[in-house]
Amino acid sequence: MINIPKGTKDVLPNQSYKWQFIENAARGVARVFNLSEIRTPVFEHTELFKRGVGETTDVVNKEMYTFEDKGGRSVTLKPEGTAGAVRLFIENGLSNSALPVKTYYITPAFRYERPQAGRLREFHQFGIEVFGSKSYATDAEVIFAASSFLEKLGVKARLEINSIGCKSCRAEYNRALKNYFSPHLEKMCATCRSRFDKNPLRILDCKEEGCKKVIAGAPKITDYLCGECAAHFKGVKNLLSAQGLDYTVNPMIVRGLDYYSKTVFEFVSEAIGAQGTVCGGGRYDGLVEELGGQPTPAIGFAAGIERLLLLMENTSAPFPEEDKPLIYIAGLDEKSRDYVFGMVTELRLKGIRAELDHMDRSVKAQFKYADKTGVKYVAVVGEDELKNKTINIKNMSDGTQETVNISEVYSYLVQKENL
Ligand code: HAM
Image 1 (cartoon, rainbow, N blue to C red):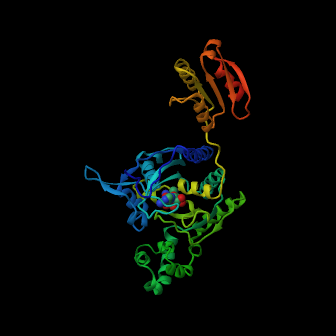
Image 2: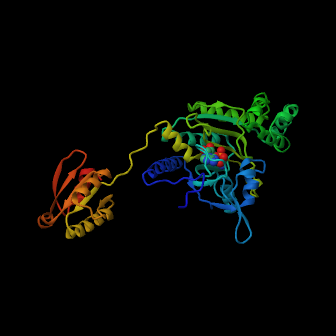
Image 3: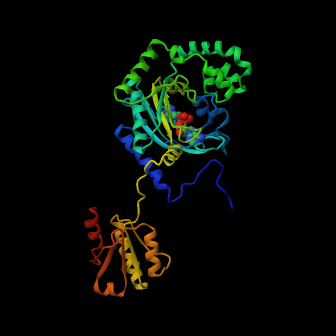
């Protein structure tokens, strides 16, 4: 037997309604926030992610699914949605349309990571990307969209925000970090040492216990923000507070991808173990230009669907009831079964979720099966019913029965169920 690849998951028939619930919540939020769906290919030119996500990130250095296609081009399965969204924005000339361009996507993403609870090699993201606005109100709007989404799912996660400044304040901060880390560098891990030269800010993201102790005493970015970045951050915080959204400022959030500037944020939960970030995002004002477009400020987030599912299951967040068939019609003999086939087909064409037997079960077994599916109404057709042109429809939830004209099952269900 061939097994599923490590770090990937099947969605089984009795679980898919949970995915649909999350996806519908995402689409519902996208609608009220006036975001339009975009879809980008699952693979892109490798260069897009190298330049977009950044050469000093784990995602690019260690985790990409990169291969050469038969034409000798290097392509990569998307490790996240932002770089592709930016490419779409530039390539399709969307900077010439009315700004801001407000988009969302639901996409698979691929990272070659060590699988554990909440960390997979193929996972799925609901993401939002808004292009063209530098206003702090857009940051607040995007954070609100994330928070509304989580609220719709009935999950609780803590909001942590930070500002990592712009190029100019970051240059000064990087100098301060280097001064601070330089005497400690020898006892820090190899990754931190390599980040020291390339991108000292990334050191703050290290999870090694020894390094974490040193990092705890590092200077805070929030003390190095330039006037404009400080005012922007204040604007975001004021709007969040004014709308009653709780948050904490965590100056240690730098995010795992290189493109961020100014506002960054994460929604975190302790209920799903080490991989507790269910949603992360921030501003990336330089990325559109970096990838060859007109300078365009932008901001977005992505939430991991598998992590949300895990969080919902671990905290018993309520999923809606799984959709069940409304009616099951059993046939007693071959002639009746053929007739039932016509009845069920007609109901289905009219939009009723209806079921019949395909396994040549006895009537008793058909009833047992129907009951197991959670169906609400059951009816039987036999010689008598065909002769009298009436059938009994039994309501399985209260045990009541009613006799109905055999050609009026649809109207009966419409009336009973207010369809
Ligand atoms: P990210 O923080 O790398 O950001 O990923 C966003 C979310 O995807 C995480 O918070 C997590 O829920 C989920 N996720 C990431 N890696 C895995 C994994 N291996 N297994 C399961 N879930 C995972 C981004 O991807 C950015 N593109 C977000 C963004 C959009 N920033 C601006 N716009």
